[in-house]
Length: 240
Image (cartoon, rainbow, N blue to C red):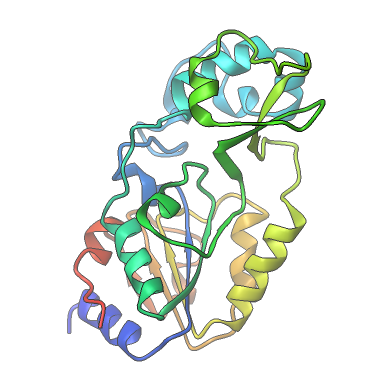
């Protein structure tokens, strides 16, 4: 039995599945990740990306932050790939209960998923730091310099920057979904970013499936380990 056939059997036999995903889910949609060989961490800027994407840098050098943000983080023409689409189908079929994602691109919702917990926020939501008014991603892309609200306040993406804490409500919902799941499918993540990666410790269900091109620190915990691109794997699954 191939690894995909084993995955099919696990999915067929359960109806309370949770998916936990990272950057690798979106790379097949053309969105660069941070830690791969050609990811953002290995490109050259005046400052390393992890510095630019920090709360301190945003406060001290917002102009520089937004130059990088518009150039590298706002990939608004990206489309959902086979992984996003299959997860949405599994949810509609009553098999998948939730998607817990570290991604900020909104592609799971674009594919049709409803129960999506975005641990690191979303580029599609932006708010004035002074009055709280909402602005969409297209507004941010069209803006120049530091985007300002009509009230004069600075508009900030609803994205968790380095040095910032995760949203408590999102974490609680993610933990509850993972803790109640029969099957946890972990895909497209190196499981290197904490505290997000630590959430899988709340899983005490039947099977844990790990799908990632590279090795992770949790490979030995997986009941099924598949080292292939997540979209390529999920694209072969039948929803029944």
